[in-house]
Image (tube, rainbow, N blue to C red; front, top):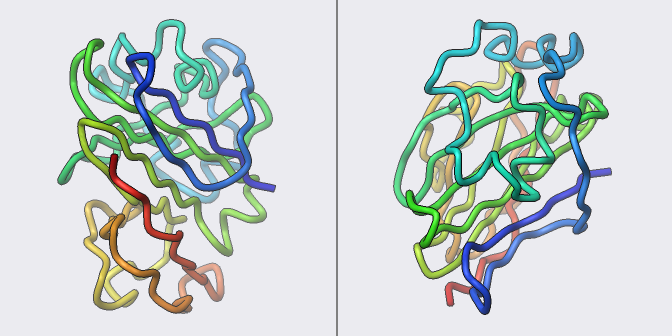
Length: 192
């Protein structure tokens, strides 16, 4: 089961995410689970200052509370957002998207999946609000992201982006080091 949540900075700000809404609290400073590191080698690397979520996200927001602070790793920035991976209190792998760079003007979201689902399908997340929109997919190690085809921008070995306003592609399957991986696009996000 996947879980997703989204948070907007200001009252009345519209934001969209795909998946089940669920608020969860991660245990502070929990070490990255062995299961997470088995699927994403980045998770076993030493955390650097750049790997921490922005203070306005990590302090007192549902997104910041979902993922254990000691487990976040920065995946990169592109287009509208900045992206991190992390794990929650249940050892699920999470994708975090932050659009906007100030406490007064941001929208953030997170989506998590257990390692067994993550290996076969990754984690997808759409986030949209006044600062912009993003559609991102967190991939396990060994997925040849460049072979997913047109419509995806590879940001890092574990992160691809797609146009959040585009019609979904048909599911795409590629063979990686852990077997067959199938990426299914999310429905288009209405930008408000």
